[in-house]
Length: 404
Image (cartoon, rainbow, N blue to C red; front, top):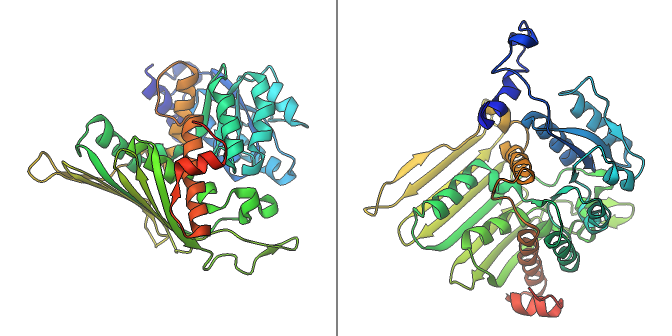
């Protein structure tokens, strides 16, 4: 069975209308045995999404989890039972036990941002394949340390910058880089308007010292995309932002929240490409929009979920090339059962690529160095907001004693 049919069968095989078929009569609807076993480190909202998409994709299964929060453990058990009610999820009593269990060949790390360096130091001793959720770390020193570990690591080390796999961005990457539809890219514009951060255990995402602040925690996805499209080293960053609406009166254990809820960021690249990013986190929807302008055409892509009655995920991608060559409009998307699995299907395809990486196939997944550069741009933007000045990337790296 081809990989596409193998994956498609995972959804169809669970459809109750085919329950009458005995296993001996299933071919297209057969469910091959998973070839890989993963443990999930940190089983909150993101960890449970990784559990679901691993089972849904089908080439791997979840063996166990480690999380000190009982509510997260129970949530993980429920997510696991949706796809495998016969096998009990192993719950480890220590990080070391979860990382070094010989029954698994991969680890998915979904712990709070500020713990990433500590967790990776333990996980990397296992030699297992690693998928580390974004951001790679909250500080440049931690991000560099993890990157150096990853670049000498003997197995797959992938960073979870899965927005590369959102349908609109996947198509935009293909058009701009594989087909070169737009010619030489000169200008990039990205924006995200969305709801505030949701609740987390201990509310760590409301405090910059734990999350890295908003431009690191959330927006590393977008800075990764800017870097990917620009295909160049960033040179300068200028930003303006504030804490205008969200969590201004929020306190947790006597500490007041201090995270940004809006920003405008301008990045110039060494090859002359100019880019900007616009963030608003007090909007009543989820909306993303991308513009790419080259010397042969312009691409516009958008994705929207607005919670209006009867409105599902709405996407559009438009390519206008004038007299240069073909122009067109399309609505990129994935099958509904994939889009509903998390991040509009991006996490599913990130997992498919993680397994492809393990099995030796080439993918476009983010490396640790990609994760480092996304945090470099985010950190420069946050420094610019504090100082009101343009930040030189070379100066920032020199101040941090980072040579890359």
